[in-house]
Image 1 (tube, rainbow, N blue to C red):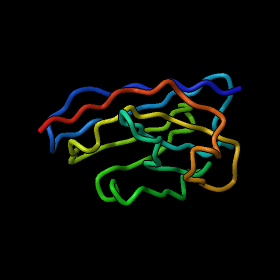
Image 2 (cartoon, rainbow, N blue to C red):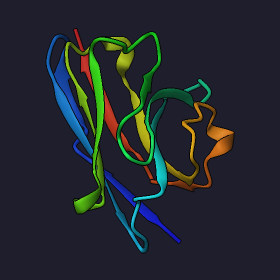
Image 3 (cartoon, rainbow, N blue to C red):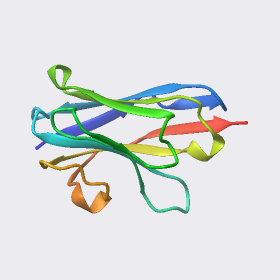
Length: 124
């Protein structure tokens, strides 16, 4: 059973950057697809980015494409989300998710393993 712990959130001015980390324990993530989702108050959890098990394939929500980068370091059992040119609408709790899967699903229903989340607040 894999456990996930996110870190790196915080308060940042619009146009700034943050780097989120998701450290996994209890199992290696070599065969897991890893994704980031976010949830703002009153909203449903929405897809942000996904990276497949070997890091070759990535996919992004249109709202973050060109600004966010997802990448993984399987040797460190960690996945990252580099967020640049942040906007106030990026404000949300960001959750890391993992699932044993050969693809790269973008729906939260496909993931059984979740972290508690890290708050990202962007002010203008």
